[in-house]
Length: 262
Image (cartoon, rainbow, N blue to C red; front, side, top):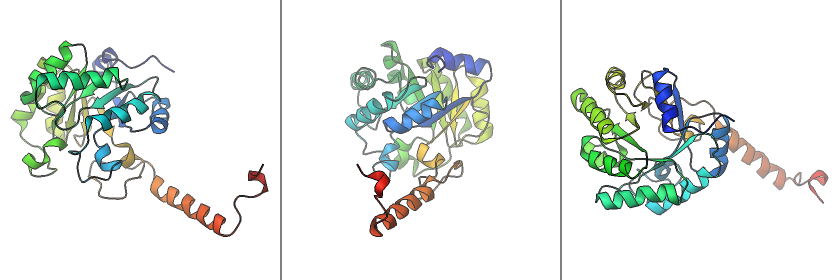
């Protein structure tokens, strides 16, 4: 297994124009499989509110829930950088609250960094967390914690504001920035305007790296899929067939057979 991925690893990858690969994970077993595939960043996303908890959005996810999931993900990772996603109202209320909660991700959950949403408006928080030695990944464009303000999940097209946000979060100390729901040409300009890596999700191919939600990538999500998602497997269909086969064999007395008995 290669050396663990660090902030410096990601900076070097951007300089070398080597693409950064990121995936979300929420438990030990999938985190271990993802890590063994060589993925550079494993984000424990507050998207667990959707794909794990079945919620309509991410707003109800708590700090304690994020700490729990980040802790069990960290146990399965030896190579990738584990980033804990700071949930709604875990950093917005005050700098002190933000610093304490960021510290919990590192101290209690084993994360190497945290992610938080917002551009210029949260730069003071990014700087405060960075100043105590915790790397911060910024997140601009479509920010799911602000869906009520944005009026839903909408592509963000304000080029001037987006570029300014990216420049400001870099100045504040962010080591990378997620670009979500941004037209490809704007994401390209942002990527060329800053020195820190950009990680795209629905932001086209010109970003320094890409991230997808694991459940979308594996075809486990059978609901609505955004345009930017590519399903690399259809685990939902395969899992349902396995459950059906098990059901039928138990009903028919075929399982357990002699080979499964002591």
